[in-house]
Image (cartoon, rainbow, N blue to C red; front, side, top):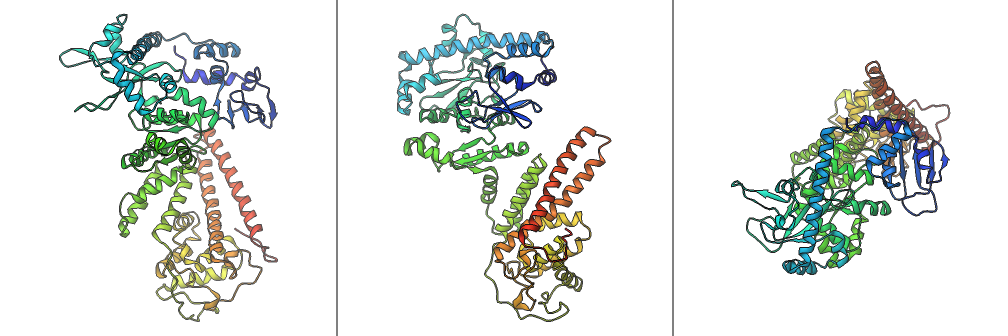
Length: 619
């Protein structure tokens, strides 16, 4: 039997993590958690927390994070199986007997590591020998220091099809091929996979050599510039990040991990003193690699070349990451100047220039917006509609409902601001008197039904209910209707009573020039100025229009969030019988959010202005 995830979950559940940590770290109670000075870096103010209920420790200073098993490995220095055995003894559990098949595979992997370690030693010796002169000259021209060359294990694969069997006679052809060091052609001839290349070892998280990357010297027709080992029992390129074993400790100190496009970029930055850098191995970032990065920091920084290929690589990474986003779990994007890779930038402008770029990355949503906005010309309404369709298609891939909702709102706002830019105001038409009791009449072209509804909106706005006030505010500033169209549509679905008024607002927005923020309902057009005790500033004639529109946006958000949460809560309660545990957890989360919205509603009403005497907000 193998050690399954379920067995490890039971092991963690039987261990009180704080008791385990307190064997070597002094902890004090901090609410439901424990805190102390982090054992992974020097600090005087405690930033290391242990949460027994969630079964993890986390340092807000260096980013160290893990569970009981990782604590025994990272802090106590035990091998994984030794950590499992010690924890099982504490928990009173039997360690499962090893699966014979898995045990045989583990033995085979250990033997293959002997092959790759021996090959690495051979390549290093070859670099120092007569055949490695050209490679040494190349590395010297690249400016790599002797220390960096030793640390990263540069070597040289002689241009010889049979060098490895002669150099490593202790290993048979099957082992050499199983480790990815040898290949065979259709005629059955076996030969060294790496020939005439500067070699770099690829290591796992424990620093063991599991594969190689090789760069050819000069130009050869039909020969790849870079060549990596194939996937083997040791090496899965989609589950490996180059330099992770060095970058992880550095990332705990810096609170950052940087992802570049290739291993030579990693070494160039290490040569410049930037150590918290990793790279994928010839492929776009995979879901597994993203998970590995998020275990180190909440927002890894992806650094791409400034050319079109770098932009496409950034977009592939963003597309891969979107379904996996969550609270405090995102990416940041750095684009280098056009035509420069990290090595070029450091050589031309110094390490400080690179650090300055890494200190000012774009957020994932900024990078997504800019890429899609600039992807094609947007000279026609159809092209602009295509931009919105692409943005919303990306949003739909996000699994976390809260993040998805926030992305939809943010990208919708950006699209509205882009597609409907402000225009210079037009001269106001003379006010038309009518059944609006002295206020300016709605413009020609509105249906009689919409005109009546808008009159009701303006009459109800002064009664201070939040819904009536928001509708009145949008009638006062019709240029804001398009900005909040999606939110208003959602409100109409949740509040059928508000739907006819919202439809009239949409009709108003279509009839008016939507850029004219004072088309109706202003004092200059005949509407009386509201009294000084108006509760909402966006209904007060004396409020600056920009400030009024911002307050109106906040009011729309509050108005829409509550019915949406109430609908979600009702749906969650309805599925309690079929999924009691999941339903209960979801109800708890939604009720917490609903309470937060209620508090925001109360604070919003108190903050804006004193309520009208004798009235009560019925939002």
